[in-house]
Amino acid sequence: MHIYLASGNRHKQEEFAAILKDHQVSLPADAGIEFNPDETGKTFLENALLKAQALYESVKCPVIADDSGLCIDALGGKPGIYSARYGMENGIQLEAAERNQLVLQQMKGITNRSCRFVCCIVIMLDANRFFTVQETCEGVIAEEPHGEHGFGYDPIVYLPELGKTVAELTAEEKNRLSHRGKAGRLAVHCLSEISKTESTF
Image 1 (tube, rainbow, N blue to C red):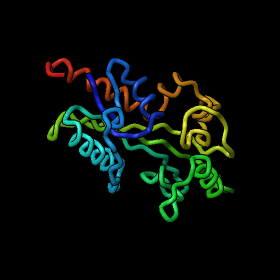
Image 2 (cartoon, rainbow, N blue to C red):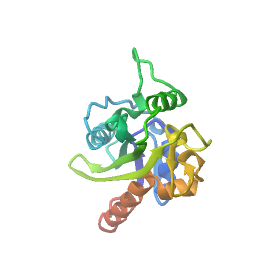
Image 3 (cartoon, rainbow, N blue to C red):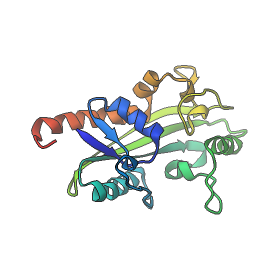
């Protein structure tokens, strides 16, 4: 199936392409579509659905959208749905390394460092048919960044069972353990079941 990913992030496209390896995953930019919808939802599900609906209106074919972020218990679930915009002032978005430093500063001296990445995926087949899955990757906030892989908050989320941050995982490990990998596999199962009954895709 050819499916459009509701994102402009090439890193995210690479992750989804690895997870949805039996499907062709394109970005809106690949079709010359400028895609930057307002994420006005109050939950990961609401934002994922908003993005899926916005892209479907442009391409009129199956789309997949996700909304994901880091939720830290000691910060009341922040940055949450605002993960990409965390610390933004006057419309200027921080670089990933700056956001990581902001979180580490806010967590200084806090012993409860439990956190989780959350990913909600929406598969939209048409304007009236969609499926959703949501998964997590549990971890703790590290004392300092480690690792060169991944993106976003990966360098500061430590996985105690592996003794590594997410940014220290191989691509294969990340796809197996990450919130996006777990949700993606459920999405693959969903797409597989759909493909068995939908001859048009």
